[in-house]
Image (cartoon, rainbow, N blue to C red; front, top):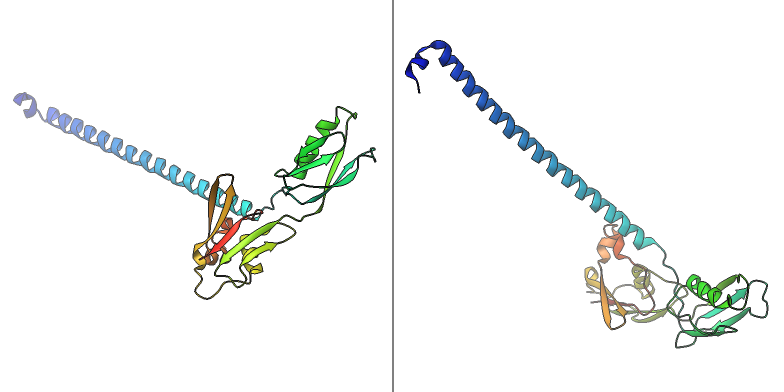
Length: 226
């Protein structure tokens, strides 16, 4: 460094101002970086919170939403074809899940909703009738059966007319026995060659903490109370 330059007071103060400017610039830059990081992390946190709240709301909706009825073997269906009285009749869903209907012959009915069955019949009838209009009425439900086993007052199968929730099924089974582990209830649902297990914490559900666990049971579901 030039010593003579330092001896000049003007140069000395100029150098100090330059150093202060550099220091201030660095400080502002670091502060701006910290502020950006803070705003970014806050945005992520708010986004996660919104997703969590949306997920909880969706779960609560699904827990209380009444599911579409699925036709099962032994159900009795009334099939009404508008302006075709000779086709209107009651049919029994056979054990194989199929029904017999004029012009359509054999048709799969088990495992689908009445609305889906209506569409299938209308599609088949289009070959014989111009713009067929079909109405499906579930005359009698004789197939909805669920099972509650383990530490309940009345273990066994339950036959009811419409789908019930886990909490309703436990009530129909008479409630818990002494020493039942209420927080470890499970629902076992069969899907073809595999089973799906749903958790149910009784204490949480009745306190409104996890309403999404109080699902509607499907026919064949097994509620297990350890």
